[in-house]
Image 1: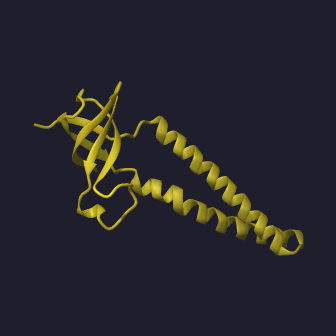
Image 2: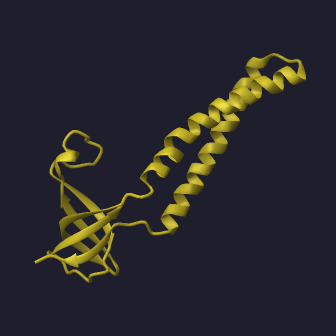
Image 3: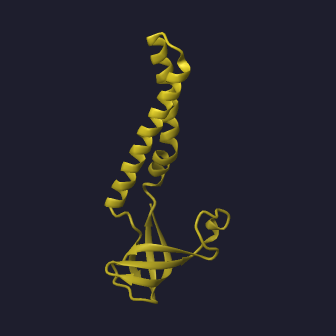
Length: 137
């Protein structure tokens, strides 16, 4: 799904432009973005917009659910599975499960955070930046 927003170009560097976009009604209760009235996006300048021009910016939100799952849910699942794995391993080795449970949970956490870091790098490499699609009148 693609969202189109209107904003003003406040800085241009090569093929990247900084676009100031006013917040809409959906943003009023969130507070996740800095600033009260506007958000500044780094966007690919495919329309060759100049400084001070009004532009239409297209944002892709297709990967939002996948990103939320990988960043927030995957580490929780990995810690939980690591703890259960530690308990099973402790039973198999006939040892106290507490230390194995902690070790399994920490192993799951470290592995999942490594994957989150890998995912972050792959997303950055794919250039999932907002795109300026046209200069508005």
